Each structure stands twice: as C-alpha cells, then as structure tokens.
Amino acid sequence: METMNVDLTLPSRREMQRALRERDAEYDGVFFTAVTTTGVFCRPSCPARSPRPEHVEFFASAREALAAGFRPCRRCHPLAVGEPPPLVARLVTAALEDPGRRLTAAELEAMGIDPVRARRAFRRHFGLSFHAYARAVRLGDAAGELRRGAPLDDAVFESGYESHSGFRAAFARCFGATPTRAGDHVVLRWIGTPLGPMIAGADARGVCLLEYSEPRALEAQLTSLQRRLGKPLLPGDGSSLALLAEELARYFAGELQRFTVPLALAGTAFQERVWGELAAIPYGATCSYEELARRVGRPGAARAVGSANGRNPVAIVVPCHRVVNKDGALGGYGGGLWRKRRLLQLERGVAASASAG
Image 1 (cartoon, rainbow, N blue to C red):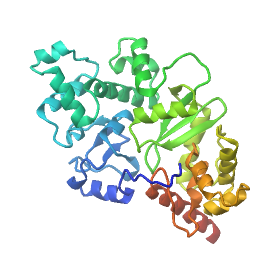
Image 2 (image 1 turned 90 degrees about the vertical axis):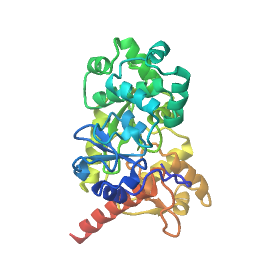
Image 3 (image 1 turned 30 degrees about the vertical axis):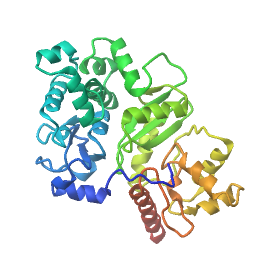
Image 4 (image 1 turned 30 degrees about the horizontal axis):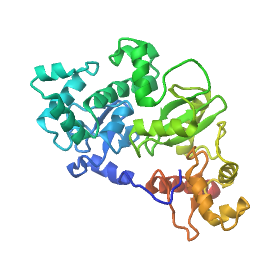
C-alpha cells in the first residue's frame, strides 16, 4: 500500500467530521458521507440529524458510495451535486425510481428526450453512460444486500433482474467475475473500519487482499485486482474473512497487536522477503526504508524496497505503514498520509499505555 507519489483524494477525517457536524455546504462534492445504520449516503450539508461518528463512512465520489451498496438520500439528493442539467436530472430520477427499468431509445424519444443528446449530457456530467449508471445503481444495491448477508436469490430479484443469468452477466461486467462453479477464485467482502471501507479478499489458503476502497471507482478497482491476482473475484465471505473482520475490529479498538489470520501472499521472492520483514516490525515502532533494505540483505536498495512496499497487497495486517523516511517523516502511503498518521498514532498510544501500566 506504500507509494512515493501520494494521491490525497479526501480531506482529513477530522476535517470531514467537522464539515459534517457543521453541515458545511462548501464541502458538497468534495466528499460524501454514508451512514452504515441506514444504508444511505448524503452530502455533508444534509439537513438530516447528524449520525454518530462510528456509523459514518466517507467516499470521494457518489459512484463509490453507490458501488458500496448505499442509496442516495432523498432529502439532500447527493447525486444532484453540481446542479445537473434538467435532462440529466430526469434520467437520474428514472434510474432511482425504477432501477430495473432499461430505457430504450424509443422510450426516451417517447419521453421527449433525444437519445444521442441524453447520452452525451449524462456522460459529460457523470463520466459514464446512463446505462452504466443504472447498472451501477442496481449492482450497488445487490452488492450491498450480499454484503449484509442476503441470499443470492434475493439480491438477483430485488435488484431488478429476472434471472440468475442476467444477474451473473451484469455482475461480470461490473465486478470482473460471475458467481460460477467452485474453483480457484478470490472471495471478496467489504469491511468497515474507522479509516473508511476496505475491500478484503481471500482464497482457499487465506487472506490475499486488504486495501482501501475509496481511491478509485469500484469497477476500475476490481478490474485491476482481478488482473493482478489472476483469479475470478466473487462476492461472499468465509472463515478467513470473518476472522480478519474480527481482528481488525479488535485492532482498531486497541485490543490486538498481532494478527493471526492466515495469509496467502503472492509476489516475487524479493517482494515476499520484504513483506516478511514488514511483519517483523514491532507494534508501535517504525523502520526506515534504508534499515529495511539492510534487513533483507540489500543495503543501498531503499528504492527497490519502497517499490516492494508499495505492492504490499494486505494493508495493516502486513504493516507497511510502519516504514518511514530516514529523517522520521512519514513518507508515502497509498491510502493517504492521514490514514498512515492515524495508524501510527493508534499503535504508539496503545504501546505507550501498555508500557505505563
């Protein structure tokens, strides 16, 4: 998860919480808030009662919130951020009111809408076609239901699909794989954390993936993951992922310092050696890139170590956040420096408390 070129896609969590608490409209469009207890996402300025901080997840875009299974709020209309043209607003309303409906060119013309003009306007405002948007709404609803443990049949029919085959085909387009016969595949699930939602994956051997799901749109992220892992990606759960979720909750509560969940890391011999040394960095401590290079027998190869660090597929559990610059500066972190800072503060605080006790 490390990278030397950091892409800060969101303000600090403290700043977002302040904006949410004060209903600051200046942040509308900068980030979106999702409430885990209601399954709804909003603008920061939403007039609804502010949720408890532990029930909030933050997203960089409305599309990410949709893909994570949250529905747009009917009070603040987060999909209208940026004042979409009336034509686009009509299509958004149609998609939300009836996600299963597939508007044909003839139906659009019957509504007095030029299909070509509508396609261009929608893509210009949202960056994707209307049909892709409607599909994201349907599949986002389905992914949310699956994440909350709904049977596959419920997810299929409640998302507007008339058959498993239609659902599987749509799921393949959005998630890169279909719920096919058992085989060598990676099961994915969302795990909520105080640092935002994360995507976790496991194969039959153990956890092979844990990364933040905010930095990019879900569809592009899952396509990239499937290419990287070389296996189909299926929604679901399993013993490794259940244990990972439990241990992450204990970690963020300051109750766990060493993970026991089985891992299935796949990299080059050098990468796996670096990842092994990362796991050996004590809780509450840090290590420089230069020191890490010496530990793997490659003194002077700090850049290569940094590259291997950046390809760590299992964040937090394999603690790449504990590697810093030689001068003590944080360096980089693919999930954003604010997350790295929070992780180190958590670990140092717990370690100091244990030492004092």
